[in-house]
Length: 251
Image 1 (tube, one colour):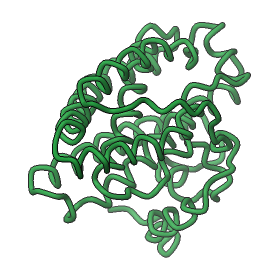
Image 2 (cartoon, helix red, strand yellow; image 1 turned 30 degrees about the vertical axis):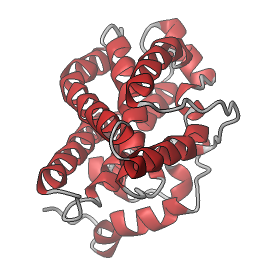
Image 3 (cartoon, rainbow, N blue to C red; image 1 turned 180 degrees about the vertical axis):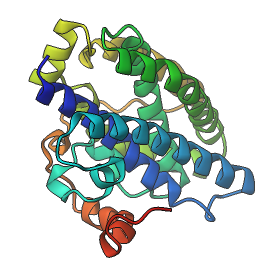
Image 4 (cartoon, rainbow, N blue to C red; image 1 turned 45 degrees about the vertical axis):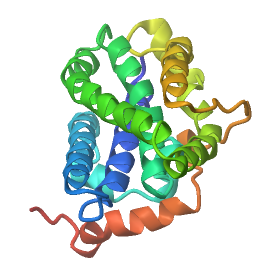
C-alpha cells in the first residue's frame, strides 16, 4: 500500500459522504412532513460526521498543514472524487428517497466488508458507521415501499426517479486499479463483489413495492477522476462560501 493510494481511497469515501450530506441538508426546513424534515437532517449530519472523521485522518497523513476543514472545503471542483449520483439535485421527494435507497443499500454492504480491513482506521470506521447506515437503509426502504405501493401518483413519481438515477449506479460498483489494489492487499474491498448481494436486495424491495427494475446497462462515470456534472459547481459555491470568505474560520 502506497501513501498516495491509501490517501485517495480514503478521500473517495470522505467525498461521497460529504457531498451526499450537503445535498440532504438542503431538505432542512423543506421536508414533506416534520418527522421527515428531522430525519433527513439527522441523516445528513451522520454523513457529514463520517466524512469529518476521514478528513481528520487525511489531515494526519498530509504534510501540507491543512486541517480537516481545509481539505473538505477549499479544494477545486476537479479535486473532488465523489460518485456523480451523490451530487445530483434532490429533485422531488421520490428522487431523494430513490437515491438514498440506492446508496445506503450499497454503502451498508461496503462497510460490512470493510469491517475486516487489515487497516485499523478503516476497520474501526466501518464498525462505528455501520449502525448509522443500517438506519439510513431502513428509512429509505420504508419510503420505497410506501411510495411504490401507494397512490398511482406516488408510484409513478418513484418509478420515474429510479429510472432517472439508474444510469449513475454503475460508478458505485466499478473497480478501478485502486480498488483492485486495495482488495488484493486486504485493506480495502472490491466494489464489484458487492453487486450480487445488492441486486438481490433490490429485486426483493422492488417486487414488494411494485416497481420495475430498469434494464439500461450503460452508466455515467468520471466522478472518481474529478470530472463532474454541471451541478457540482453550484453545490460547492454554497458549501464553500464561509470557508472561502473567511479563510480558517472556526465555529
